[in-house]
Amino acid sequence: NKCEDFYDVVRDGRVPEHDVLLTNPPYSGDHVEQLLRFCRSNGKPFLLLMPNYFCAKDFYEEALGGAAMAKKVLYLCPRKRYFYWTPKGLRKRGKVQTQHAGAGGNRTSPFISFWFLDLDPLISAKALLRWWQENDQDSACKLCKLA
Image (cartoon, rainbow, N blue to C red):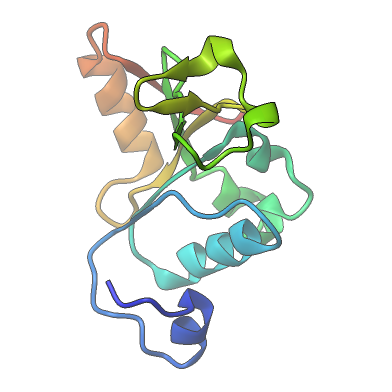
Protein backbone atom coordinates (compact mmCIF):
# COMPACT_ATOMS: atom_id res chain seq x y z
CA ASN A 1 0.00 0.00 0.00
CA LYS A 2 1.10 3.49 -0.80
CA CYS A 3 1.38 5.87 2.18
CA GLU A 4 -1.18 8.55 1.36
CA ASP A 5 -4.20 10.23 2.91
CA PHE A 6 -7.26 8.08 2.27
CA TYR A 7 -9.62 11.05 2.32
CA ASP A 8 -7.52 12.85 -0.33
CA VAL A 9 -7.76 9.74 -2.50
CA VAL A 10 -11.55 9.69 -2.07
CA ARG A 11 -11.86 13.43 -2.71
CA ASP A 12 -9.73 13.16 -5.88
CA GLY A 13 -11.75 10.19 -7.18
CA ARG A 14 -8.69 7.89 -7.11
CA VAL A 15 -10.13 5.04 -5.02
CA PRO A 16 -8.61 1.84 -6.42
CA GLU A 17 -10.90 -0.81 -7.83
CA HIS A 18 -11.94 -3.19 -5.06
CA ASP A 19 -14.60 -5.73 -4.12
CA VAL A 20 -14.80 -5.20 -0.37
CA LEU A 21 -13.47 -2.78 2.26
CA LEU A 22 -11.90 -4.45 5.30
CA THR A 23 -10.21 -2.21 7.86
CA ASN A 24 -9.44 -1.42 11.48
CA PRO A 25 -9.52 2.38 11.19
CA PRO A 26 -8.08 5.04 13.48
CA TYR A 27 -10.66 6.02 16.12
CA SER A 28 -9.51 9.59 16.72
CA GLY A 29 -10.96 12.78 15.29
CA ASP A 30 -13.70 12.32 12.72
CA HIS A 31 -12.11 9.30 11.00
CA VAL A 32 -14.95 6.92 11.80
CA GLU A 33 -17.66 9.34 10.72
CA GLN A 34 -15.89 9.99 7.41
CA LEU A 35 -15.28 6.28 6.89
CA LEU A 36 -18.95 5.40 7.51
CA ARG A 37 -20.00 8.05 4.96
CA PHE A 38 -17.55 6.60 2.46
CA CYS A 39 -18.71 3.04 3.11
CA ARG A 40 -22.33 3.95 2.48
CA SER A 41 -21.63 5.97 -0.66
CA ASN A 42 -19.13 3.39 -1.99
CA GLY A 43 -21.80 0.74 -2.62
CA LYS A 44 -19.44 -2.14 -1.78
CA PRO A 45 -19.51 -4.61 1.11
CA PHE A 46 -17.59 -3.49 4.17
CA LEU A 47 -16.24 -4.98 7.40
CA LEU A 48 -14.91 -2.54 10.01
CA LEU A 49 -13.26 -3.63 13.25
CA MET A 50 -14.10 -0.87 15.73
CA PRO A 51 -15.00 -0.26 19.37
CA ASN A 52 -18.61 -1.06 20.23
CA TYR A 53 -19.40 2.50 21.31
CA PHE A 54 -19.43 3.86 17.75
CA CYS A 55 -22.91 2.49 17.06
CA ALA A 56 -24.21 4.80 19.83
CA LYS A 57 -22.51 7.98 18.56
CA ASP A 58 -24.74 10.89 17.50
CA PHE A 59 -23.36 10.82 13.95
CA TYR A 60 -23.75 7.06 13.42
CA GLU A 61 -27.16 6.77 11.73
CA GLU A 62 -26.79 9.93 9.68
CA ALA A 63 -23.32 8.95 8.43
CA LEU A 64 -24.78 5.66 7.22
CA GLY A 65 -27.60 7.38 5.33
CA GLY A 66 -30.31 7.44 7.99
CA ALA A 67 -31.97 5.03 10.39
CA ALA A 68 -33.15 2.54 7.75
CA MET A 69 -29.68 2.25 6.19
CA ALA A 70 -28.02 2.00 9.61
CA LYS A 71 -30.25 -0.98 10.43
CA LYS A 72 -28.67 -2.86 7.52
CA VAL A 73 -25.39 -2.94 9.44
CA LEU A 74 -24.79 -6.17 11.35
CA TYR A 75 -22.33 -6.79 14.16
CA LEU A 76 -20.05 -9.79 14.33
CA CYS A 77 -19.24 -10.04 18.03
CA PRO A 78 -16.53 -12.37 19.32
CA ARG A 79 -17.65 -14.51 22.23
CA LYS A 80 -14.25 -13.78 23.80
CA ARG A 81 -13.06 -10.20 23.94
CA TYR A 82 -10.34 -9.16 21.49
CA PHE A 83 -7.09 -8.08 23.10
CA TYR A 84 -4.64 -5.68 21.48
CA TRP A 85 -0.92 -5.62 22.10
CA THR A 86 1.49 -2.70 22.09
CA PRO A 87 5.02 -3.85 21.22
CA LYS A 88 7.55 -3.58 24.03
CA GLY A 89 9.20 -0.19 24.32
CA LEU A 90 6.39 1.86 22.73
CA ARG A 91 4.66 2.76 26.00
CA LYS A 92 6.24 4.74 28.82
CA ARG A 93 7.17 2.59 31.80
CA GLY A 94 4.62 4.36 34.04
CA LYS A 95 1.82 3.55 31.56
CA VAL A 96 2.43 -0.21 31.52
CA GLN A 97 0.33 -2.42 33.76
CA THR A 98 2.66 -5.26 34.70
CA GLN A 99 -0.18 -7.77 34.98
CA HIS A 100 -0.83 -7.17 31.25
CA ALA A 101 2.80 -7.43 30.11
CA GLY A 102 4.05 -10.40 28.16
CA ALA A 103 7.02 -11.49 26.07
CA GLY A 104 5.63 -9.74 22.99
CA GLY A 105 4.53 -6.52 24.62
CA ASN A 106 1.72 -5.03 26.68
CA ARG A 107 -1.96 -5.85 26.41
CA THR A 108 -4.03 -2.72 25.89
CA SER A 109 -7.74 -3.22 25.37
CA PRO A 110 -9.61 -0.30 26.89
CA PHE A 111 -12.81 -1.08 24.97
CA ILE A 112 -14.85 -3.95 23.60
CA SER A 113 -14.58 -4.19 19.83
CA PHE A 114 -16.41 -6.11 17.15
CA TRP A 115 -16.96 -6.12 13.39
CA PHE A 116 -19.45 -3.67 11.88
CA LEU A 117 -20.47 -5.17 8.56
CA ASP A 118 -22.76 -4.74 5.61
CA LEU A 119 -22.28 -7.25 2.80
CA ASP A 120 -24.94 -5.75 0.54
CA PRO A 121 -25.18 -6.03 -2.49
CA LEU A 122 -23.72 -9.56 -2.20
CA ILE A 123 -26.19 -10.66 0.48
CA SER A 124 -28.81 -8.71 2.42
CA ALA A 125 -28.62 -8.36 6.19
CA LYS A 126 -31.84 -10.38 6.52
CA ALA A 127 -30.51 -13.25 4.38
CA LEU A 128 -27.15 -13.25 6.15
CA LEU A 129 -28.80 -13.35 9.58
CA ARG A 130 -31.04 -16.22 8.48
CA TRP A 131 -28.04 -18.14 7.08
CA TRP A 132 -26.04 -17.51 10.27
CA GLN A 133 -28.87 -18.71 12.51
CA GLU A 134 -29.27 -21.88 10.44
CA ASN A 135 -25.55 -22.66 10.33
CA ASP A 136 -24.01 -21.24 13.51
CA GLN A 137 -22.88 -24.18 15.60
CA ASP A 138 -20.90 -22.92 18.58
CA SER A 139 -18.82 -20.48 16.53
CA ALA A 140 -16.32 -18.10 18.08
CA CYS A 141 -18.59 -15.15 17.15
CA LYS A 142 -22.22 -14.17 17.27
CA LEU A 143 -23.90 -12.20 14.47
CA CYS A 144 -26.23 -9.51 15.80
CA LYS A 145 -28.31 -6.53 14.71
CA LEU A 146 -29.56 -3.46 16.55
CA ALA A 147 -33.20 -3.59 17.58
